[in-house]
Length: 140
Image (tube, rainbow, N blue to C red; front, side):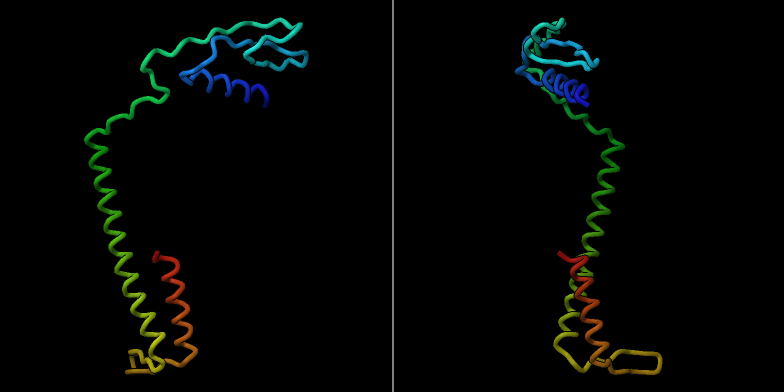
C-alpha cells in the first residue's frame, strides 16, 4: 500500500509544472520501495532525475473536438431532455392544481361507470397524501 501511495505521489509530482529536480529511490530491509526528495542515511539509493516540463505545457490534455456524429447525438439528447422537462412541468402544474382542489373542497365527486360518486373524507385525505407525495418526488 505504501509503495502504491509513494508511486502515485511520484507520478503526481511528475505531472506538476513546479517539480523537484531529483527524487531518490531505495528498497528497505522488508523489500518495500521508497521514493523521497532526500537520500536516506546509510542505505544505497538511486537518484532519479525528473524531466523539466516544457514551457507552455499543460498537465491536462486539450479537449477533443466532438465529431459531427457526436454533435448530432448531443443535440438529440438535449432535445429529449427538454421534452422530458416540459412533461415534468405539465405534470407538476396539474398535480398542484389537483392538490389545491382536494385541499379546498371537502365535497368532491368522481366519475365512475355507474355515474357520479362522492369521495369520502378518508378517500380525499388519501388522495391528498398521494398527490403531495408525487409533487415532492417529481417537482422541485
